[in-house]
Image (cartoon, rainbow, N blue to C red; front, side):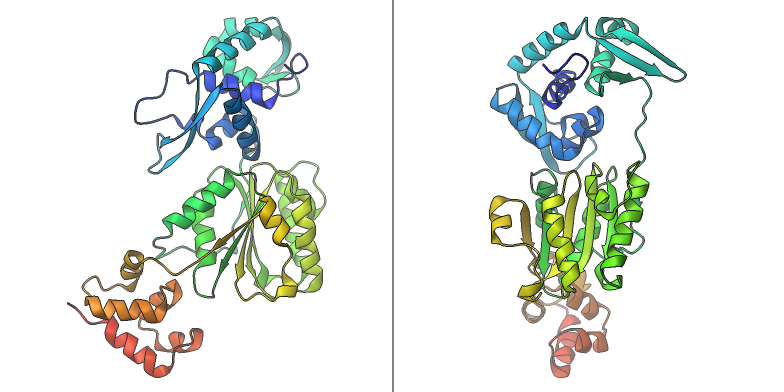
Length: 377
């Protein structure tokens, strides 16, 4: 165990999970046993949870499951304490019984032992309080700062369909040890909309959205990062301080052709990430000299790439807006648009000029697609 009054992250996670040893029903687990729930409950960054649970699982104290979680539709990773873990947690709690903490409550601060805390609030609540303790201090009141969310320049998600596999991979990235996710796609494949839909699912995360096309060079990028850091991290002063804010996702939207100094900023970021995670939407045709990472960062797992393809057929059909479209007509539409969300959306809206301006289709091909779009079985 760490110094008296200073538990290790692994010990705090084990104590936390011991509270839910008998709470799981056969088909559902409490949210507090997910990665986000563990991080929120004991007051650590979500990026620290995977390392802790892997170590505990290796020792046979915790097991990882894919299961349904209360309040969520999809299955996700949850962690269940094993019988050996319960025994170890009980031993740890017994060892802590005479350890003294500073107990802070509104208007009051006193030195108490763990057994005193248990006598005051009961075993279960005492375990929760001690598992959340920092530097020998137990807080009776919740002093967590509200999430800082700067999404003023992010696109909307109206009409968003499909991409469940991609969203699943983005969630897996958030739970992994990777620092940067690069979402690569052809123009019109919806990388920005996908990133926004993902961000909307992270209610408890700090989020900064930076649209690179609207930034007047590197100083503007750094200014946005600095402003965010000052709001989210007490004592922050520089732009790279934003990378040290726990439970934070920074989205750089629209990485394509950028100035040399911006490439240097992103290259530096690869080695400087601490607590925050970064998502970058980028074009497949980004010039080779503009890339800020290399094969070694991908192979090491520091950078993860997600390459977008067109929508699946069911999602493309739903976006097209003609549920009764003739099967052969849909087959041709899907083949000519390659499942591009942007092209399908303009086809749905019968946007002739937009299709001519934003795709490689000829005027004659656009007219043909508009004809096919209205064919009903």
